[in-house]
Length: 132
Image 1 (cartoon, one colour):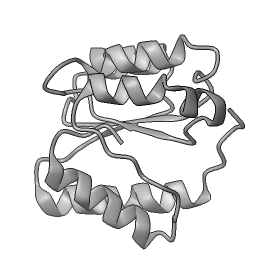
Image 2 (spheres, one colour; image 1 turned 30 degrees about the horizontal axis):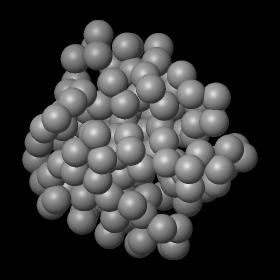
Image 3 (cartoon, one colour; image 1 turned 90 degrees about the horizontal axis):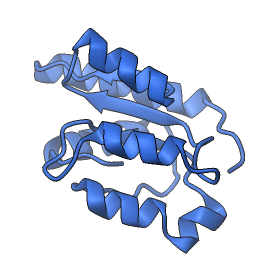
C-alpha cells in the first residue's frame, strides 16, 4: 500500500482485515521507498499480489509508480488499485491507459470514504490475482 495519509492507511488496512484478508500489508508513505521495495530482489522473485496506490504522494506522482510497475516484465501483471482523491476524468483515463485495474476516488466525507473502503475489502476478498 502506497498511501501518505496514515489515517487513510489505517482505515484501509482495517477494512481489508474486516473482509478476512490475512495477507501481509506493507505500507509506504513515500513513492521512492515503495519503488525501492517493489524493485527489490525479494519482490521481483515473489511478487506482490496487489498494489494499492495513492496518486498524490509527497515525493512523486503515483502515476510515475504505476508507469514503472506496468513497464516491468516481472511486475506488470500485479493488479493495481488506484485509491486517490483525484477525480479528474483525464487523470482517471491516464491511469487506466497505464494499466491500473481499478480506480477508486476517495470521498472527502469520512463516512462515504469508510463505506468505499469497506466495499474495497469485500472486492479484494473475492478477487483472484495472477501469478507473478
